[in-house]
Image (cartoon, rainbow, N blue to C red; front, side):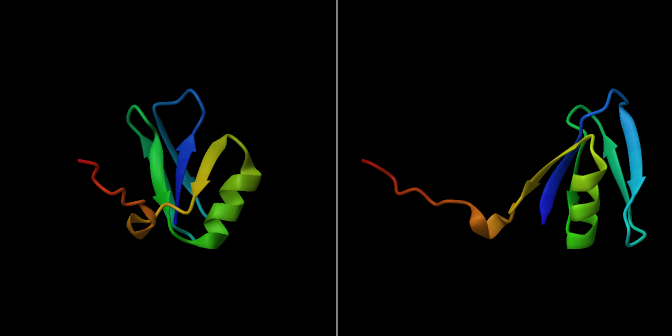
Length: 67
């Protein structure tokens, strides 16, 4: 899974992935979650997007509490 941010000036932007899924980039952050690897590679090569891979809840580091 990856978080993808649209870097363009529009406040609402949609793009259709190679698998047929339509991704919407809306709001202030313009971020969408992309889970299919084929679509992640397409968005990387297309340009105008920032792709951050390896975003899973299980990947969050758990720090020990310091007393």
